[in-house]
Length: 359
Image 1 (cartoon, one colour):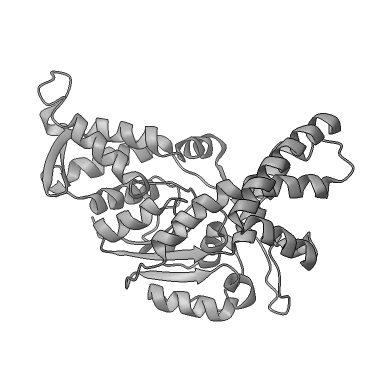
Image 2: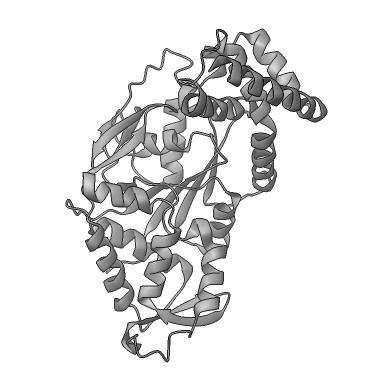
């Protein structure tokens, strides 16, 4: 069994367009798209390492565990032994996407984001029992070897694909990474056979997209405020500090990263310079590009059209909702820290008043 898998991770801070990028690359016959975010162990490596160190040898003398069912793991040049089932339990409990995998098992479906507020349903037959059994069998196959972090991730990916109804041999695995900088650092420090695409996006766009999601999920159908636009601006300003603090940390820690396995992409390139961008991406990935594949797809199913003559084609572009003057005022407030703190406090109070009045 091949365990040296080539993995493609799409990373970036929150609301940078990771799903859109994954959908652009999806559909290539040599690439399998894992349709869940936060999958594997590279996104939570620190927690995984602590778990292994704290639980190593705990069950070795227990009568309940067969000594033949233990696995040896290398962490920072030290070696730890624990039962395979304990490792499987960690994967189930800590992969935040496991609820969605379980849902797919029963519904035979999974979902893609067409926009920030719209989902599309796709047929997807995953057998959860086979997935867990495959993890167990694959780990057991290599129990006489010392496994590092990357090999463990490879085995988890391979176990997942092997549990599908339509099993094929893929050379590359594509996955949407987490919003945390930790996964980027973990890949650089512990992995060899990977490609990492990091997406950057303007601050106003990230704050706007995040606020738009909150608005539709929490407020849109619950308020009768006559001017919802004003309500949304208040929400955006209130939400700005939290988003900016998180994304600034991400941008700061990735700004000086230079690595042969990393490609930086601007969000707007996906819509304004798509052809050029895709050529650049496939050259970076060292994969032949599919002819005329410039649209977004999910599990090889087309989910959106692309017109190169239309400049702005993403639904959560602030320009589709605000005038240039309004955008400049919002930018002036949220990019100035003292003003942002002041207006966030005022906006939060006004939101509470409008929400109570408008319900």
